[in-house]
Amino acid sequence: MKIAVIGGAGVRTVIFINGLLDRCEKLHIDRVVLYDLNQEKLEIIGKLCRHVVDRKNGKVEVLTANTAEEAVTGADYIVTTLRVGGDHSRVMDEEIATKCGVIGQETTGIGGFSMAVRTIPTLLNYCEMFRRVAPDAWIFNFTNPSGLVTQALRSAGYDKVIGICDAPSSMKFRMAGYLEVPEKDLYIELFGLNHLSWVRSVKKEGNEILPSLLADDCFLQDVQEFRMFDPEVIRLTNMLPNEYLYYYYHREQALEHMLHSNSLRGRTIEDVNKKMMEELAAMDMDADP
Image 1 (spheres, one colour):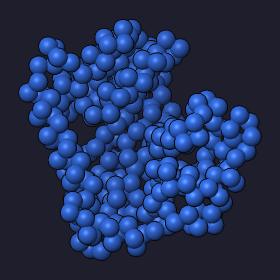
Image 2 (cartoon, rainbow, N blue to C red):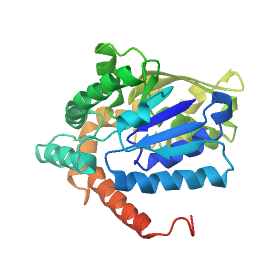
Image 3 (cartoon, rainbow, N blue to C red):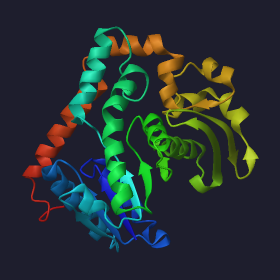
């Protein structure tokens, strides 16, 4: 079976391939085709992915494509992970918003709205092509703001679309680490939409432990996703919040931090990604992967 990744030159693609290798036989995935507008970055990321496969003696073939249609034709699954306008579009969203005295975070509020306005038309065009060359494929949308984008695609009649986000799985991973239990022994019931979601049940080996976690100051401080919240605010909801709810529950504090920051997150990520790709481009990856 074949997976196509649209936006495959993103740094998370390497992590995606690494995770897929643990599940590819069970899922019968034997081919991944990556496509990105930035072909230079795609070549670098594609090579890194192939080294990850070789290191694990994996049986997945990783290919790169010159066009989106080439990547998607005959695909069983399609992952969309785009940033229309590149990293700098996020920088502009955040900096324009903060100059106007509002939060410019990329998935909530005005920043998320700006990103959605840029992104939805592009993905609608892609989906029209998907319908033509891979009509049976399921689409997993990893493009932010995932909730808005996924709803827009479904409202346009693309029924085989599922919005995905790594925030819930990261939360569960860190909670299991704090509790010193394997992830498989921890059950989390989460509801909501993408970054606006809450955990309303946590069971360890079948026993409900959410009340004790809510009462545990150390837990709320040590697990990364919860430490920025006022514990009493969390307890008022009687649930554990997705970390992005910080921008709603503590919006004045969040804005204050952004206004006094030396560099907003978008600018930091843009600089890190630029330096990383320059270093990767200068390396002999085949000699020393």
